[in-house]
Amino acid sequence: MATFYLDYELGSDAGTGADWANAWKTITSGATAARIAPGDIIRIAKSPAPASLGTTGVWTNLSKTVTLGAAQTLTVDLCETAWTASAGVTATRTTTTRKEGSYESSLAIASGFTTGKVAYFATGTLDLSSYQKLSFWFRNSAAIATGAILRVELCSDTAGATPVDTFYIPAIPSTARYLPLTIARVGGGNLGSSIQSIAVYADSDPGTITVLLDDIIACTTSGLNLQSLISKNSAEQGGTEGWYGIQSINGVTVLFDNDTNTKGNAGRGYSGTTETVTTYKRETIKTALASASSTQVQAVQDSGTLGSNIEFQGGYDTGTSLQTGETFFDGLNGNGYGIYLSSKSYTTLNYLNVYRYNYGVYYTTSNNNTITTLSNANNNTYGVNYTNSNNNTITTLSNANNNTNYGVYYNTNNNNNT
Image 1 (cartoon, rainbow, N blue to C red):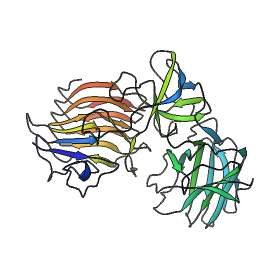
Image 2: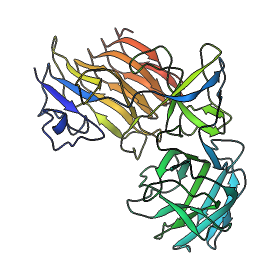
Image 3: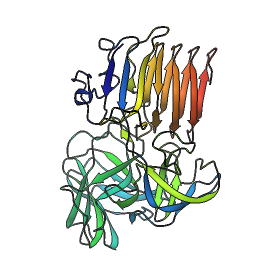
Image 4: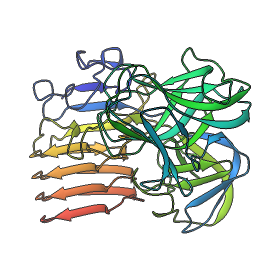
């Protein structure tokens, strides 16, 4: 039996996996069948611990809304009004998959457009000097390739012509999926103190593409944002309260999401005790964006044997090598299989949480596997799925909340225990 190490954010699949300094990055290409064997344990780096928002939240049973005692962000544009478009672009307000309010901003770029300012919106004068990032929902009709193609600018004039703060849109292989982006300004530091408009620019020809934007907010480096999870739970490991994906933030009002394409007026809310309590946020480990609903984001590569499971143990502190926390894997765009097991047997998953995938954990034709503790399988289409898979066990499943179709789904299986 050997112990290996995996750190999705700092590791490399070219490493040996022998210690944290040489940790693998992914389950798929790090913990390969050639490297691991029955009885091995793969220790996986934990996510950041919960952080208090420094204020209370009013939590209400069966409500989509948490009302904070003090705002954590500042609104730049809620996208209820159409932007002003440049030639070759059609700017409208639409309701396709709005995430906040009644509308979203739609920028339809035609084939005749090449580069330059796509569109802009006059925000009124905003002092954003206490913030370092923009957070917003972004949806694209065509894939965005690697490279500086589209950027968002905060400008000091009313026509989006004098940029102050620049934010580059990353490569996005998926289409027709909203995803929350949280981006620091180029060069770091605080945002402008006298912002009067926001604009989108193209540095190279983006081709024919429609971009949807919604709920554009300024946030701090370590503060609440649209990629954060929110909860009453202060425990770094365990706790009964679930962690919820965020649909929108508008001042003190935070709405819970289902999957990332759930509209602002749809989806489930919080289930639990109605009370006003200190509220916490937690950041996730963002896995590579999946291009399609069936993309295998991380796939287990080998099986154990009876009495010698291969164990994938999340929640490890890379400094102490103690299992003091949990690992929250996050697909962001609602695509892909977060953790995928096909024809695998005698494996153990522990303290691995899955968010914003098509399937959080997916077993197919996989028998005699164990999930020891799954604290959260939330905001997916399916939280945990078993297909043609027998004799599997979930020992503890604390939360399978706000998944669009099913929390736990069994399809043509026998002798499974929860």
